[in-house]
Amino acid sequence: AIAKGASLQCLNHMIADALEFVPACLEYLDNIHEPTILSFCALPQVMAIATLAKCYDNEDVFSGVVKIRKGFSATILLDFAPTTSPFTEERLRNSYRLWFLNQLEAIRAIALKIRATDKHSSRVIEICEKTRAKLLSN
Image: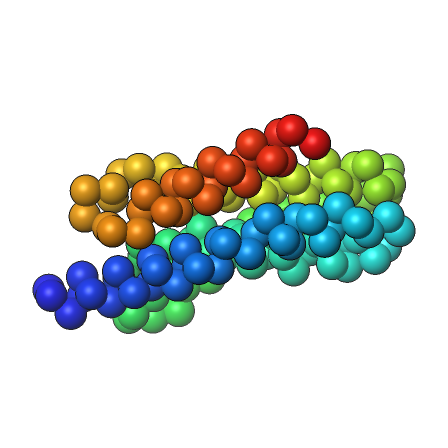
């Protein structure tokens, strides 16, 4: 149980480190104006934040493969497909912002639940709240 707890602490620490880069990622995406390039760049970032949300504080990471579900992935893919109407910079920007907001909120909710047992949860909550505020202010 001690090793399991330490492993989970390490996992949560790595995810907290990864979350530190989300504001820079969003800033980069905000500077892309061509819809096809924006879609190409935003899609893997949305998949990445969804994967971080799925892995955060998840013991299954140590005993098997943890992936976002196919239906969830398909929904993300369809949201960024050039066939989606309208395929505009504004719609794509709103879409990736909404995906990020939802995934950050999922991570924040887990962090709030495990606050007493995870020493990285307060950092994760702070990152999520700062990033959320930034997303909502633009």
